[in-house]
Length: 187
Image 1 (cartoon, rainbow, N blue to C red):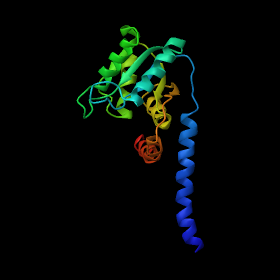
Image 2 (tube, rainbow, N blue to C red):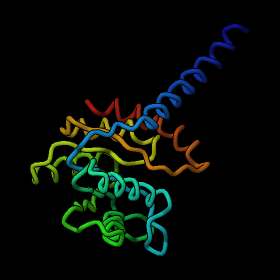
Image 3 (cartoon, rainbow, N blue to C red):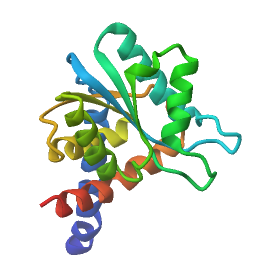
Image 4 (cartoon, rainbow, N blue to C red):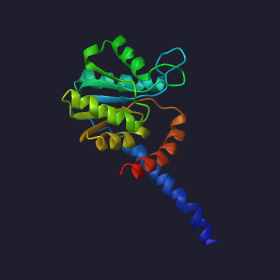
């Protein structure tokens, strides 16, 4: 009976502790002056507008830009099943919110967190930019920061989008194996 309890409770304890660590890390903004805010993509609505989750990420980047915490906003996302380039939709949203187009760097090929990080590092290097703040949902920031650092961006902060929904419970749980997979494949 003791063994059965250990076999059941130990994995549950590990998953719970991992989820708690991801949430605590993600809700702990690390905002120091940086060259770029890297906004990771998310779903675009069928009408071509940012989903509420994506809009929250963009709005957080706008806030950081207006506060002077970042000089540029790098938006990154591929083309989703809706048929829209997340990068272009994000760019257009920022321009509509009065962000100067010359302050926006667009990556239309950020199909994964790793792709976004590698593309951001290349685009930043081309412009002589060296520091970044990852902007995403809180549960995604631990892996996003790791990916940016692994891509060569040593100074990487985080800022979470202030948007919560019930789906975040699932997304946090999904992030545990995603983070483990990323960590295992990083080397």
